[in-house]
Length: 85
Image 1 (spheres, rainbow, N blue to C red):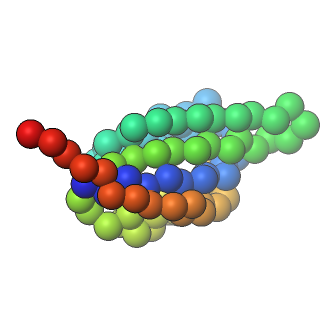
Image 2 (cartoon, rainbow, N blue to C red; image 1 turned 180 degrees about the horizontal axis):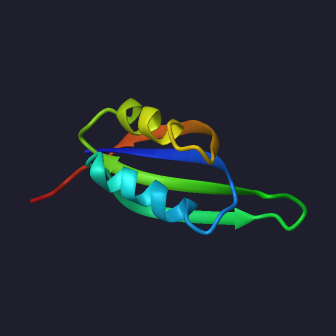
């Protein structure tokens, strides 16, 4: 499986995290880590999302960009994850 880290900039609203997680799950990605930071001086949030999947990360990227409240996404890095049986 491949592990990908995404940096997401979005408008702060109560449902934004739920929408991002729903799209992530529906596209076949598993969340491994999540960090969300809301600055008090703006209406934006920064979300760092680490996911794993055998699917290309561009599939998730394009679907998340369609969300109205998402301002931008950066794919920070990806690495292979070894699975032992």
